[in-house]
Structures are given as structure tokens and as C-alpha cells.
Amino acid sequence: QTPPLETSPAATNETAQAHFEAGLALVETDVQEGILHLTESFCAARASGDHVLAGKASHSLAARNFMMGDSGAALEWSERAISALGQVDEPLLLSRAFKGSAVIRADSGDLDGGLEDFLAARAAAETADNAPMVADIDTNIGSLYLMTGLYESAEEHYREALAYAERIE
Image (cartoon, rainbow, N blue to C red; front, side, top):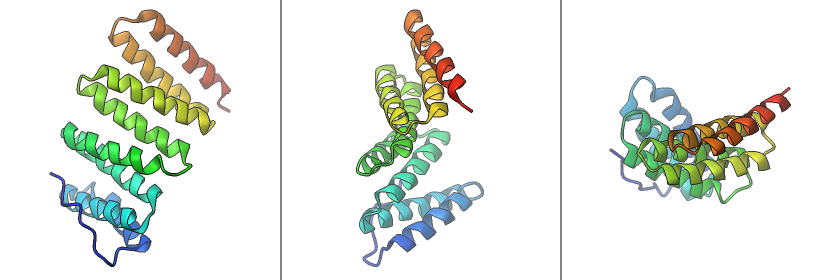
């Protein structure tokens, strides 16, 4: 369950960062407390205009909710991450957010939405010139095509993944 998205008038970037670090540390041992801190981080980061931290916090919340089996909340947080990170020039973080959304959508049965997000993740990873991420995403795209019976498209993306993997030093 998502805590309310209210922000204290005294929210600062430092508050957002402190909540983010506490949330990451706590989420492994006290899930609800960790989620509360990550949510506070998102709210404070959004209020202070820190789109990168808002994106990181919401991406972490998406991943945690997905692991807990709440795909609806995971998708909502994933959309917040994409929205926040789309406002800054951080293509690798944006790629990760789109990839997370793609996994959630595909796992929920929305294969078209998953493919759309994987393709957006791939484009952002290419912009970031991150060969390992492009290779990983191409593998995911290939698997999605394989699941839908589009074998030639699957093969094409697996070959592209191999080509990018060969570029990794």
C-alpha cells in the first residue's frame, strides 16, 4: 500500500537524500519502514525540484512493489520514475526506469506495453552509449518476441545483443 504523497513544507534536497539512503538501507529488513522512507524521499525530492532523486526513489519503490507482487503500485511508481527522469539529461537512469516498467508490463501480460517500454529503454541506453545495457535490453526484447512466436524478430535482437556484448571491454 502506498503511503500518502504529501510533502512537508520544510522538504529539502538534503531531507530527500537522507530519506532515500534510509529507505534503501531499511527496505531489506523492514519493508514497510523502507517504503515509507523511499516515499518521503520521492515527495521531498519532487518538492525541492530534484528530478534525478525523485526518479531514483520512485524507481526503487517500483522495484520493491513489484517484488512484493503489487504490479499496480509498481507500475504507478515506474511511471513516476519515467516522468521525473524524462525531465533531466540522464539517459542511463531513464533507460533503467523504462526497463523496469517493461518488465512489470510484460509480467502483467501487457506484452505490447512491455515491448514499447523495452524499445524506449534501448533508445535511452544507446543515447547513454552503454553497450552492456543495450545488450541486456536486446536480450529482453528477443525473449519477448520469442514468447509471442515472432522468431525472426527474436533472432534479430539476440544477434544485436551479441554484437553489443562484443563491444564490451
